[in-house]
Image 1 (cartoon, one colour):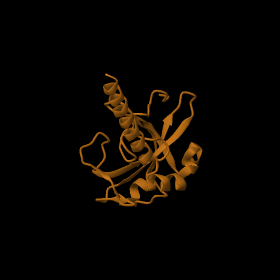
Image 2 (cartoon, helix red, strand yellow):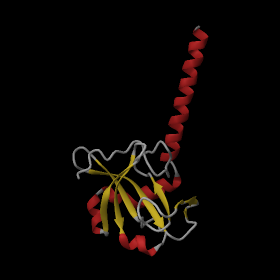
Image 3 (tube, rainbow, N blue to C red):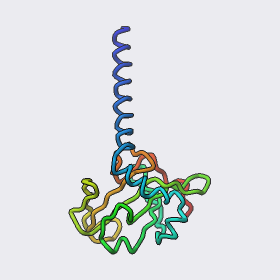
Amino acid sequence: MTVTRSMQSLAALALFAVAAGCAQAADNNPLAEHVRDALDRFKDVNVAVKEGYAPIPCASGVDGGAMGIHYVNGDYLKDDAVDLNKPEAVMYEPMPDGKLALIAVEYITTKGPASLENHLFSYTGTPNRYGLPAFYQLHVWAWKPNPAGAFADMNMNVSCEAAKS
């Protein structure tokens, strides 16, 4: 009986360590670190606005989680260039106090297949829920850990609940 409980406890501890290691690996991803280093200025949403980014409504996932409010730069979206320093979208989570917390960026191009520092972009065909032509995109969760990985679309730890209509 004691051995069985010890084994169960050890198994639970091992699962916790693996999960923590996965989250830590996402936080320590070199691309996410490069993005944080280059784009930390966007912690102030006013910087994004001054640099030509404009908000679109908060995007929630159908199965939970969210991507947050995207501040999109139309000029970068049109140029199809992939530049670490010029993401097409900067993503914020609306907080209960009304502030916006920087959580991620998104790189978008219609030219592909595309990659950034050896990370392949995901392909979104047409028709799609955005009403856009086919495109390639890469989310980089550089400021808020994502249990699904540093490059997943939705983050179960993000909510649009505090977004103002």
